[in-house]
Image 1 (cartoon, rainbow, N blue to C red):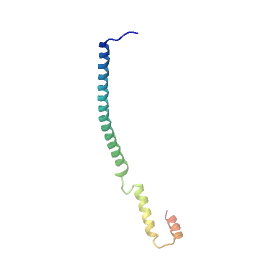
Image 2: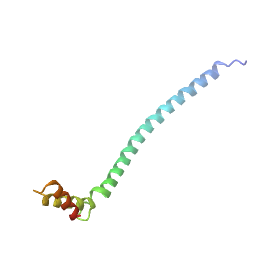
Image 3: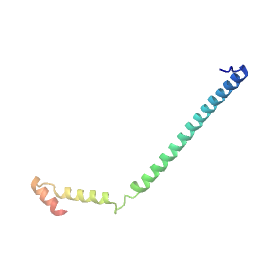
Length: 93
């Protein structure tokens, strides 16, 4: 078994310290990058959601039409019995 000198031990120790500093620097850089990335990606997804779903709430929106029809049917069913309400609502559809 070969003996290593003190000089090679110092070189190994310095290399280990350098690698530790490099790992810490990479961790800090990655943490900043990921925070920025997720914030930008979150904004992109939120804007896409707004553009696709929320902004278009005009008269042609399917959910607005269904809700309007349901309100009309409910307002017309005011004082009727339960079975009359079901029959009337089915006839309106």
